Length: 160
Length: 157
Image (cartoon, rainbow over all chains, first blue to last red; front, side):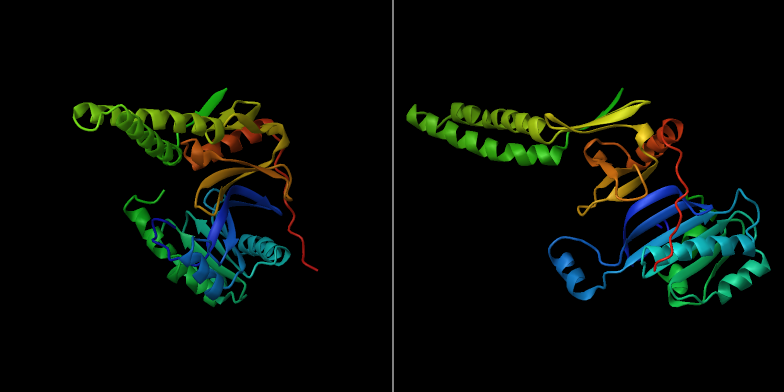
């Protein structure tokens, strides 16, 4: 996210690695709120102008388990959506990263995914391909999180 | 037992500066009463305000705010100032996270259960990279601690 120069969207304040949830282990799980804390003026601005929603970021690295399949993606989505509902999150980002080429089925599934509360993205570090779901939250992974820029950083060996 | 500790210079300066000022004023008054009003000796005496104020500030900092984290294969101890704030064993914990507080300082949070049963380790004052420490602690927990339970997402009613 840092290498991709992401824009501020939410204030994630807690980060987990290898977070087990259901039968899925998320390589990265972050949670926070859309209202930032800040000090004095920025806090006042946040309090008056920004909504206070709980949000999360789920990230799965599917590199070791072979090619990312639609079936696996469905299972990951189901667990993420259950968490969205149980934790009363307003929205969440779910990013699945694969070390192999994305299959046409995965590309089609992700681009047609239309649940509002879950922005979905699948990315390949091999081909630098990035596909996002066709919702506002999904598109924001490209626009705000700038995941595409991060993937291009792999070309230059900057990302780690 | 590994000890993680680093002097927080900003805090030390905040504790010391009022005493530097105070000791400079007291030295000035003493010099006036002794009839030392000009000359290099006045400057030399006044410069003593820095070590005096710094020494007082440092002792207060050590007594109140200096953070020391000690950890080994079995558990950890956190000392803040002269008191021990948290102590525990890895076997009690199952999850570790990095938590960023309202001043953007990264700390380590250890979860004993999936609920709100946790303790915070104030690593911001120890001069340690929180990500490296998180990975190290996660390794210790997986060796010695509870097996991380599979947290079941619960449907909201």
